[in-house]
Amino acid sequence: MWMIQHCARDVLEALAFLHHKGYVHADLKPRNILWSAEEECFKLIDFGLSFKEGNQDVKYIQTDGYRAPEAELQNCLAQAGLQSETECTSAVDLWSLGIVLLEMFSGMKLKHTVQSQEWKTNSSAIIDRIFASEGVVNSAIPAYHLRDLIKSMLHCDQGKRASAEKALCSPFFSIPFAPHIEDLVMLPTPVLRLLNVLSDASLQCEEEYEDILEDIREECQKYGPVISLLIPKENPGKGQVFVEYANAGDSKAAQKMLTGKIFDGKFVVATFYPLSAYKRGYLYQNLL
Image 1 (cartoon, rainbow, N blue to C red):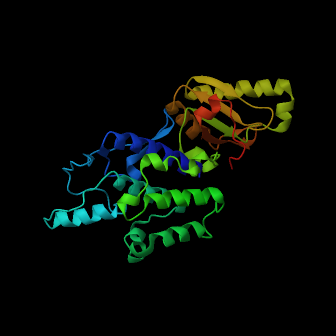
Image 2: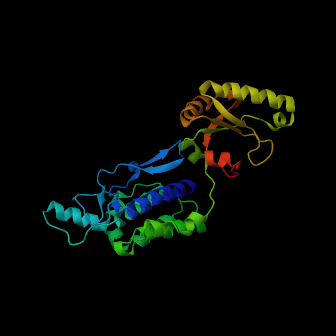
């Protein structure tokens, strides 16, 4: 949920800016959303099919599986050499993002689902079914906020679809999620977090603690300059090692080499950690 929220907010902010300037992206899909390790955000890329709203010069827009109904109709007419009476607007981007978020939540590709007759008849029921699935965790209130946000983006009538600006006001974005360990392995940042390194006994013995601190710093500096190193002695974060590198490239190299390394008889687990949270001194408690 942390990653979905992060991605949804970043892409919606990008779309709100784009749409405010009068442009439609027209090809929003997973491969056109990239993670920026240095700026710690998701970015929207590939504007090859973009057009100025009301002045569309691209006939065939959006990718199969992420194509809004009105774009589907327009593309079919264009292939037949006919002109569509309804122009595609920025609402097509919200539809695509709605599908992307639904796929992120369900863990499934939904191309065949959204092209089915059942989806065309009652997409809302299918969304409800996905959120009620036994195989999907997070059935609490935050998930229902996400469900409602996605539904607001997937109205078949583009006039009823939420705008990017309105979608950003969803209560889903007011919930403070903590990242799971899978999120922190997947999204590189300049900060590395090492688990399974120190025991409680090491934390209590000042001399041993200082020796281990120096050993860790020496090992981590093999992969790039270490800006800062933190090992909290109390919760949250007790016994975890936080290493801040100058850039995400060094952090990625260290994560690759340190994962699985044996330190003091233990197998090290290395993940990344949000730089913004680290700089604020905020250590998430629920990471696993």
